[in-house]
Image 1 (cartoon, rainbow, N blue to C red):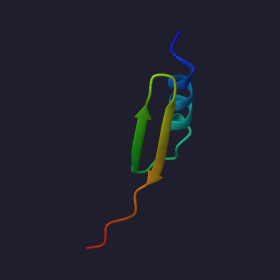
Image 2: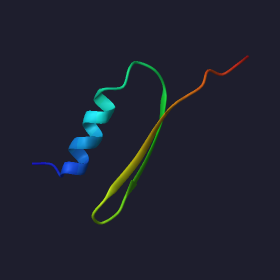
Image 3: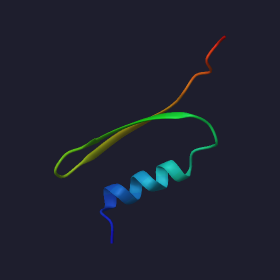
Length: 44
């Protein structure tokens, strides 16, 4: 069974609506931190 931190991360990503995102994932020995930011549209 995968670690709980991996399960929570996958659940969070699965709930994202379609689009482009920047994911920042930081793993330590006993914790995981992540931020998920929606990318802004690029102007031409």
